Length: 233
Image 1 (cartoon, rainbow, N blue to C red):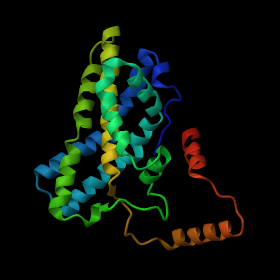
Image 2: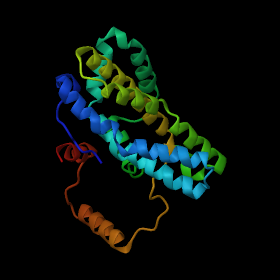
Image 3: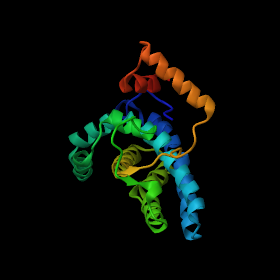
Image 4: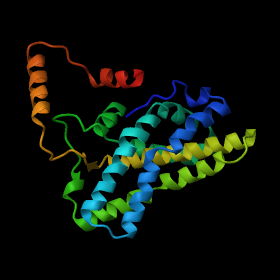
């Protein structure tokens, strides 16, 4: 879930603040989960075992890393738009924006399980054959995001300097664009870890109470208000 580690935008950070902010990003559980998936694929693990690793990978990306990067998207896109040296990244961003089907709020809601009654993507991960699921997993673990993360980590290990800071920023922007491309790719897939599980009686009872509360005129909240609460938390 979003941790809101800083209220600063990247362009307001000093080099030291940028490194401090970036360090936990580069050590998110996603990267260890990805390595675990790579090992499972190499071992030709069965579907059930692979699905468990996939769930950990998906949750680490969707519930942690993607939410953490959301707050910086507008700032990063402004930098890419303004700086000619990032024209190649801007072209990749334009391709993502052209294909996007949902708003920023909609994408955040999808990571939390989707919006009730909203059309779901047509490709259902749980309906894939074993070979199709393995191919999807293989594609995800080989996404450019992971090579970009390795470059950022390598640069962070170098002594701090003005030139090193510029290179580190550029490497991070590459990493960020890889994230946008991965998020866009996943937008075509319907997957929720709890799909198909039986709702516990106490949860069902709470849902019934909530529905009755709304029908009786109780206050409801828009998605914008819900995600504002996440940002303030």
